[in-house]
Image (cartoon, rainbow, N blue to C red; front, side, top):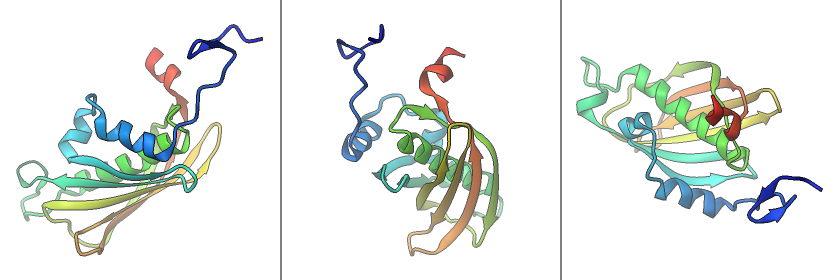
Length: 162
């Protein structure tokens, strides 16, 4: 029998979270990272089965624009990275973070201030590496940018200990 005690039961595995519970956890958090706050991040939907998330960003003109009055490409990259990393957390059942090891981004059209829809997907979740994809869309549903990435699954406990 395990010496580990979870929820007061020796050897018990933590109860799996439903998609609805994960969504509520994101919507109710009081500890949203400052980067997520800057990007105007809000979770819209999660699917553990599909290893995907749908998010929304509120791209504020006073923070994110370049001299051409478009969202600076680095911020679009940050939004894509957020989509992909949050998809990793969801794919893990909220047990892991997945720091990005590398990502490639393609830009299709400029982004304007306002709402931007993001989709994040985990294509493959392994014990040492996760392959991810992210897409950003404008309010008319036009593809703004797409990224693929590689991330390193890391249990929350290991991440917090460092």
